[in-house]
Length: 373
Ligand code: SF4
Ligand code: FES
Image (tube, rainbow, N blue to C red; front, side, top):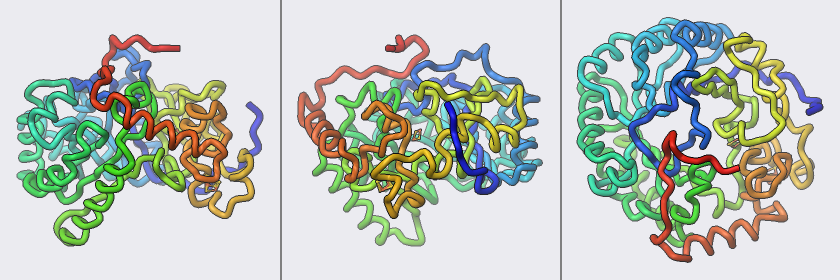
C-alpha cells in the first residue's frame, strides 16, 4: 500500500498490551480478534520487558496490561514490576478470575497503580451467564475487595447491550458498593465477536437514549463520589468517535505474539503490514511501520471527511468499522451522519434491535470458535 503521511505528531501516550488471549470467560462482545492467538505463539517475559523499556524511552506514560485475561500469564507480577520500574503507570484490565490474595500482594509489591475489573451483569445470574462462567460473580467481588483493601484505585467496566441495558442503574449501585472510584459504562462496539453477535446484542434506540439520560442524571448526583464514563453506541450516533484517538496518533496495541497494531481490530483490514516487536524497536514501529502510516493524519481521507471541519477532531471515525460496514477502510465511518451509508446502518440497527429480540443464538468467545471467512 503506497502511503504519503506526515510523521507521528509526538510519542504515543500509552501502550495496550494483550499479554495473552487465554481467558476463563467467553464474553460474546470480546474485543479480541475472532482468530485468537494460541498460547504457544506468545512472546516471552524478556521481550515484554524490552518493549516496556522502549515505550518509556519513547515517551509513553502508561501501559494497560490486558488480554484475554492478563493474570493467566505466570510472569504477570514480573512484567508489571518492570513496567513500573520503567516509570510507566500500570493498569491491570482483568476479569478478576484467578487472582488470589498471594498474587494480589505480588502485584501490589510490583508497583501496580490501578485495576480495571469487568462485570458482565449487575447481578449474579446475568453476570455468570454473559461471561459464560458459573461462579464468576463471587470471584469478581472478592477481587474488588482485595483491590480496595490494598488501597489501589478501582474502575468497574460494564459493557452494555440489549441483554443487560436495563441494569445501568444497578451497575452504578454495584460500583459504589464495591468502592470503585470510576465506572465505565460502554455500549458494545460492533467489531469481531460483537459483530458476529450483533443481532443478539443490538439495543433499540429508545433504550439507548434512556441509558444516556440515566447516566447523565447519576453523574450529577454522584459528583465527587463516582466518575462515570460512557461510550455511546456508534450506530445511533450523529458523529463517530475518534477511534483509538486517531490512527497512529496516541497509542500502540501489541498482540500476544508481538504484532504492533494501531487499534485492536486492525488485523481485520486486508493489505496492512504489521511489524512485530520481536524484530523491530517500538520507536521504528511507531515512526515507520506501514500499518501505522496507512491512515495517519488526513492525507488518506476521501470526501466528505477530506473537506470536513471535524477531520482533525474525530479523524474520520473508525477504519475497521468503515471496512466492515461499507467495504472500504478509507471511507467515512458510517456512524457519521455525513456518510452516504449512515441511514442504511441506522435502519439496520433498528431492524436488528426489534426483530426476534432475545431469541438469537449467541456465539461465545472461545478458541474453538470456527472463524468464518
Ligand atoms: Fe468526522 Fe468525516 Fe464525519 Fe467529518 S465527515 S464528521 S471528519 S467522519
Ligand atoms: Fe480499528 Fe476503530 S477499531 S480503527
